[in-house]
Amino acid sequence: MFERLQEKLSKIFRSLSGRGKITEKNIEEAVKQVKISLLEADVNFKVVKEFVESVKAKALGEEVLRSLTPDQQFIKIIRDELISILGRHPSTLNLKHHPAIIMIVGLQGSGKTTTAAKLALYLKKNGRNPILVAADTYRPAAIDQLEKLGKSINIPVFTGDRKNPLKIVEEALSFAKNSQYNVVIMDTAGRLHIDDEMMEELEKIKNITNPDEILMVVDAMVGQDAVNSALEFDKRLNLTGFIVSKMDGDARGGVILSISYVTGKPVKFIGTGEKVDALEPFYAERIVSRILG
Ligand code: GDP
Image 1 (cartoon, rainbow, N blue to C red):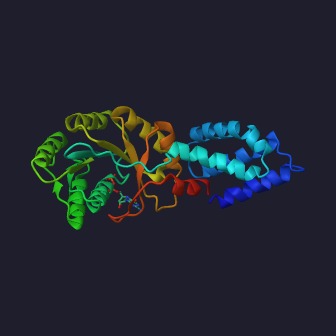
Image 2 (image 1 turned 180 degrees about the vertical axis):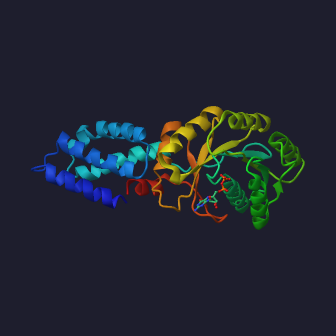
Image 3 (image 1 turned 90 degrees about the horizontal axis):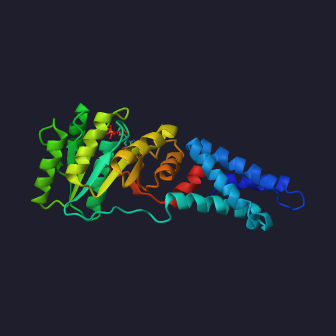
């Protein structure tokens, strides 16, 4: 874990520490290196700034200055800080109602529709009996896409009248209440950019359905922009968590740290491919080394 950063930090401490004496200056250099790693991983720059300040304050404490292995001590501080932001334990879904309701939201192209199907399959494999609801009436292909995905995993897709998303979710709920399905997963509309009309529609769907989980799908590749959209969605909908898609790409996952930090909400799953079984519960430990590089 952290081999590359560890190596760089050891070098800094060695070259600057003189006769084994650790000074404020080496800490300064080490912090700079951490900053670079985080920025390279596409962590939001404001988050990086606050994060390194808090790491620095901790590192300047007696413990590191006196430690015989300051580089390791320093790495431990960074690691602990990251894990405390990301959540020490994997965050599970909180499904209380019968049927339980999961609302999937996000910008268009984030992977929302695919993720709704992935989550349905995941829950089915874990003993649930889910039904999908196609309430994204804006992107014309979204409903067909969800139907196709549903068919491929043998999970029914409720489509309703295809035009009125509020009516669709209402009908889907009353259908599910009188059926054997115990989880309702709603795919909702996304736009390329957040707009008021979209948010109002999502708020209405939330009010009608009272979801157990409102999960925002965020594309790992979008980088710095993720923070603003996550904050806006959270402000309007009070999200219960995130699913970060496209973690199979080049992204080092800085988005995960940024959105967890600014919203305080957990990332619950990551998407790791286009296939419908490419969804994994999120483990902070696994992602930390990827972020630090
Ligand atoms: P929506 O507009 O948010 O509903 O997005 P879609 O579900 O249609 O996904 C947009 C594109 O991203 C599609 O080509 C998906 O196959 C792809 N996609 C979704 N999740 C992942 C993922 O975890 N990894 C990769 N590589 N592609 C993904």
